[in-house]
Structure formats: C-alpha cells, structure tokens
Image 1 (spheres, chains in turn purple, brown):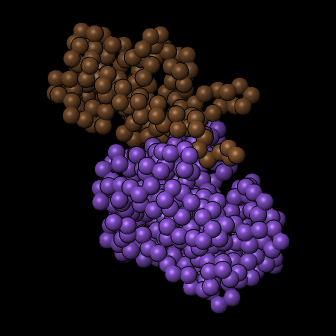
Image 2 (image 1 turned 90 degrees about the horizontal axis):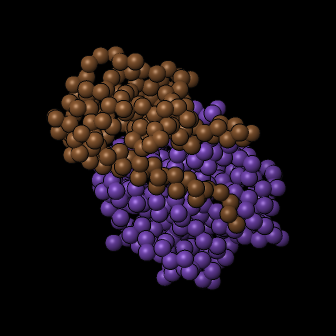
Image 3 (image 1 turned 90 degrees about the vertical axis):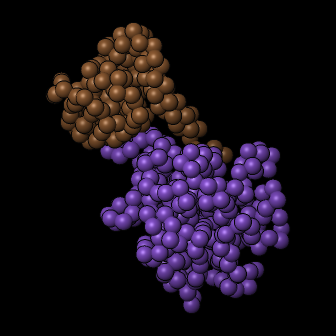
Length: 280
Length: 153
C-alpha cells in the first residue's frame, strides 16, 4: 500500500507566478541556492518540487530545499547542468523567475510519525531531503530516533556546510558525513555513503528516505534491506526530465509511472524492478 | 607495544567466537593506543599486525605522486585494519594514518598464521570473518569506482 502524501496544487497548475530572487548562495563550483520572495507566501510539503521558468529560456523542475515552516521564503538548490539551470546560475538577487507548483508526492512525514527515521542523501540529493529534516527538527517530538547519512564526492563538493555543522550540534540527531575521496587535509570519514548505513541507530520498522543518483539509491536500499528494513518503508525520490509537471505530456514517464504526478517520492518496493531496466 | 594480558576481546569481528578460539586469539593480542598523525603501517612494510579498532579514526592512504596523498577510505570503531598479514608476500598495500587517536586490539599476524595452519577449524573460522569484511570493502570500493556523484553526461 502506498502511503506517500499527495498534495493538491494550491493554485492553477499551469499558471506561472513571477517571484523575485531575494538571496543567492554559491554552494560549490557548479551548485547554488536561491531564495525567492513569493507574494503572499508559498506553502509546500517536504519532497515537493516546482517548475522554475527563466523567461525566454525555458522551464525546469527543481525540488524545494527550504524550510516548510517558512512560507515567506521559497528556496531551491540547483546544479548548473543544462540550458535553463545555467541561465538560473547567471541570475542574481533582484532578477525575476517564474514559478509553477508545488507538485508531486512528498516524503512520508505522516507515516513516519512515532517511528525512527533514517535519511540518506547523496550529492545534490541532499537538497530535497533538507525540508524533511527541517520538518523533523521543527516537530522533533513526533519522531523517534533520527539519523542521517550524507555522502559527497569530495570535501570541495559539499553542500550546506554550515547547516550540516549546525545539525551535528543537535543532541537528538545522529548526522554522519562521508566523502568518496579526499586528500590528507580532510579530517572526516572517507568512503561511500552505504558504509554509514550499519552505523545508524534505528530499529527495523524505521522509515528511510533516500535521495541521490539512481545507483546510489539502489545500493543504499540494499544496505537498508541488509539491516532488515522492509522495502515498503524505504522511500526514494525519482528524477526525470519533465515538461508539463502535471501529468499531461508524458515526458517524465518512467515505466508505468509519471514522475511528476506519481512521484517523485515513491516506495522502493514500487520502483525497485524499474531501477534494473536500462531501457526504462 | 603490548600493554597487558588479554583474555577476551570485545570486537564485532570476533563476536560469537568459541572460548577456545577466543583464547587462541587472545594469546597473540594486546591493547594499544596510537596518537593523531602516527602511522600504524606504511605501504610496502612487512605486514605482521592486524588492528581491531575500538575507538578513533584511521585513514587508509596511497601516495599518488604529483596528485599527493589520496585517502581511499577511513575506518573507525568496530572495524578492522590490516589484511595483508594473511596473504603472501605479507606486505601492506596501503598506509594507515591516524586521524583521531586510535584505541585498538593488535593481533600478531605471524602467530595467527601459524595457528591457523595448525588448526584448520580455527583457520576457517578466522578466514570467514576476515573474508566477510574484505567482501564488504571490495563492494564499497566498486561503488567508489562508479563515481556516482560525478557528471557523466
């Protein structure tokens, strides 16, 4: 049984709302975070995404990376990897972006209530998980043990450095960080993120939320299953090229699913077999 | 350097071991501590020790010439460093550099080699445990090779 949360669009799903960039932070050489000032606020659920429109260039789906308790700021963390995201990278505070959404399924924050929670984020995949962790921190009493494993390619490619430092100061959060490769100046853990899974504190009926490249999610899900996590309790966030964002164009079709409306968050048990089919 | 007699070793690698096998291992084990910056072993040195880590962080490193020293992985509490004592030519293939002070039970690889030849049941038990750890390291290394966060467009 699917227990992901599906939000109804709060506004006309095809209507773009102009929003001004209020702040911009460079996270790494190719990744940046922008804060938008939504007129009248912007409510969303952790895990949802929006379609960001650069006028005259095009539209791109981006997961929301901000705090759902702060609807006055709409935050996205973006890796410049194509025409639209490269145009977004060139934009600065004061520039205007078009926004549609929010869309998609969110992380299972309700289903996770009363249970232990394990979050596993790899690379830019940490961005869609950040709202989930913010929600947990804001509602800490609702959840059991909470641990998070974070993996990056190298120390130079770490996102949210200050926030990770802050999260690690919470006595009731277990935040483990690793990088795939480092030089001798790095004082932290080196190795793939899956190596952290056995160390995380959680009982076997915990809810796991995993986001990162497909291959990383597959290996992470395997490591979680080795710890007796039930596949229905492992949630992953899918990524696919999108056009309409509302299930009309079929551009994001992934086997029998439309990632924009059936996802991006899905139970691993529903998508596991699709991960193994290269042609999908 | 040996710091005292050991009768029981509390480490995941040895969990569930019979008393007989545990006392064999304990007979060639000692507790030790290594400070930040020390090397437990270096590439090419004779591999005659194995380290069952109970605290701290150890970096496994390779000198990549002009690229400098590369940390291929780190290992901490509950993990094991040093497999080269098992297989000829018994020389370490990486350097073990202490990042955070290490507390470990050190095993004498030379004595262990002799014991596992003399007692095949003991040798099998030991090899299964080390092989399991080596398999997990191999799988992690494969995933590392995939460079999953790289831009492969």
